[in-house]
Length: 513
Image 1 (cartoon, helix red, strand yellow):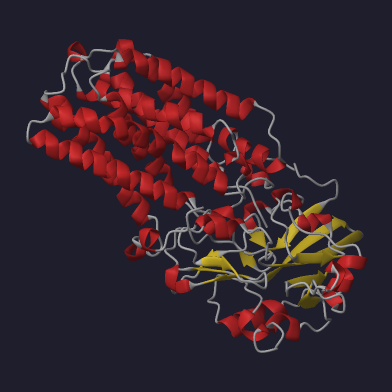
Image 2: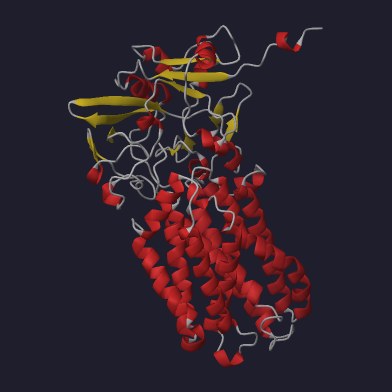
């Protein structure tokens, strides 16, 4: 019987990039585009240039940038349809036929290595030219590199050159704190290239060969740009400026900001609409039988439409249920929303027959589903491991408060003040104050990473400071809802929307690559 040391380990592909050999010729980038038919404006691999030092003691450092082929890939966990998957040989690959274009993989990747192909509207990235490896050929980038700076091999084979470098020489990986265990190793790379916050971005977005233009929701220009309000603040003591980079974009745009708001309205309308809160209406009243499920269902329908509209492949939205990957919070959230919608439909159908008691019975399922629908986005955002601002353990509680606030404000607007029982107008004031306290806590606390601090600064002093100021002003008026009535409740709702937009977009604004 062989000893454990004699048992061969399975094949595990890894890549080493020797930055001491790289001359920045971009041959790997062009070969990759040719081999994999990558369209213009997007890249599976590219070479980032950083100018370090001050003349005459200056140098240019390069970093070949691409998918890190993680041992623990967050993109695979986040993908709702298993379109992004990990092969037995360790390669993280993708299946375009099952991609719905949700961009959850892009939000999850700490290396900004995934993009949406502008021609077929599906997610794509470097897969180490798996089709070449399978027939005994090296990846295109390895073949064309004139200085042999790129190596691919089996990291479990002691005889491979890659394993020799990984096991015997000093190598580094990008963002090890994310616990993705990358299989892309850098030899001789400068910290100013490995750390995306170490080098300043050039003012105005003007790089070596042109100006960056965003493709999706907006350009990622924050965190290290003087134009973004952060002055010369970087994470490096070296004088370093990006001289060439590709555009990096926020994957989730205003539709995701709006969906979190309409979802709060839908769930809050149901949680606040029951007889326990509006006690003047018994279970046989039209208010409970018809108005509550209709209003909640209306905003839930808008939520669903916003989610589908945000997909790059909206006609494939049903793949979420046809081929669910159960670790993904997009799948879990889709199930929660669908189950909640079914409860609302049954409630309304029974209400049309005059059977309000059935709605009360259904509420024993409806209330937990509404609460789950309200807070699941916190876990979806947490699954986006690349976005440090969203890694906040208080986010589920904050989403719960936002749901109750939205529901109380909505009923304050829809129902005459004299008919309210249970004090939703007063609750708007209390819940708005709690919402502001949660915001204050999130922004004033000591953030654990430079990425989280940079994103928080984008809210208070950067690109989204206008939305932040508007949310504070409107929420301040919302606290006065017992005095202003429906106007105060409307201000509270609009203030909530302004905050949602600032929070969602700022969380995606920090450079990752």
